[in-house]
Image (cartoon, helix red, strand yellow):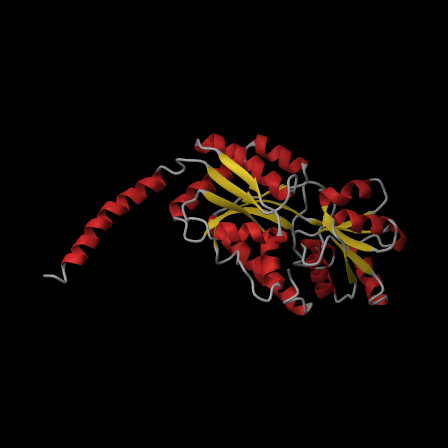
Length: 326
């Protein structure tokens, strides 16, 4: 009998705990929710978080508070959230940067696929392939032909080593069989200055950075990097339809929670986020900022994260970039 008693006590405690846990999930959220962003104020990640959080505060009846904690390409914020309680009250704006940083690091500190519970993909922004008009190039096929005729003589600027524009350029080289040399800057603005000045010839950059110069004729926009055309430039073809089928990269932003967060909470948040992304008050500011509105289920987002990890792993391996991250 002595061996039975502890088991009986555990059973009683479990019957008391499980209903309370179920009730807590049903009542979620019952207090403010913190949404952590790993990039600075005014960034696309920040804008996505604030616009969506404002709508969630209205629909779910509790404040969704956005907190900016930049550093390490959002890795610092990611680490903090990965170790937060698994109760749905600390969320993170996950981005492709977390995947890329993990692949570049010799000893990754955080893994977007395993340390988080995906909730919903919220927004994305393609990289726009632009060239200096002096190249004489007017489309993707001409750029590939020029690059192959001058291996190692063309340069593409990036906003920094390991950024999405950098890996997009490396993927372009890999798929096109070209040798356009990467030149890394401290940000898009510096790279853009050298592109306008003709010191570099090619650049992949977010739409918000280069479309105005392209419209003014200072740069020539050739294509967008996502599989589908962007609302920010609907007449601009994709790289995939311009000669490199399957080419697909973007800066994307989705909501995730610490791994182990109850599925009932994940599903409730996913439903609310997807409803928010259909609301015109949410869509208008996002589209105006050059972002494409996404959405989808937690399982779809998980599959997307897995495919992004596989794709960039191939690029990092082919470019010999592993172990060179921050």
